[in-house]
Image (cartoon, rainbow, N blue to C red; front, side):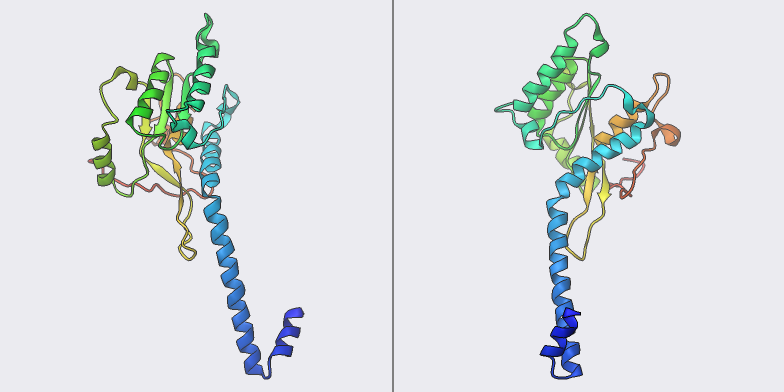
Length: 235
């Protein structure tokens, strides 16, 4: 009603009224689009973190009541090898459950989603996993093409014959968790594949496997639809 009152007050004719209405609609739409863009960009990290965590629980199914522990840290803390705040906390947490005669409380796997750092950082966490008989799940960078991925992965020489790397699984497949808003200029949010891989491994029975469609197909959940990286059978 107030909008009609302003239009009738400011407009001298029907044409003026239509013009003013269109201008105000356009202004409101621009404000709405700007606010939506800000919200989507500011929440992209949260969408990735909580989206990946929700897919983890989605894929472990009924096994979710087992022994799970969570350490909260951002990626910079995980990869900081100067202060090593997160690494020290994780090392102490793992060691306290490993240096016992009874290994029933031992940690069997650790998931560090996303690219935690370069070769030196990966080696540090890989050694921790190897020394404490754990499996480490993490991710390589999110690339658009397989050729770019292969080139960078080879140049960094992360994969090697070092025994400490034997227990490390690094995925390179990122799954779309929130679609892009092209109209607003907001990119899609992609979820790290390590969370899906770890969940399937966690939920697998001792006598079973996680291969083939019957056992290895992951549940994408609402909003997740496709992987970013595609490659042919020969790759």
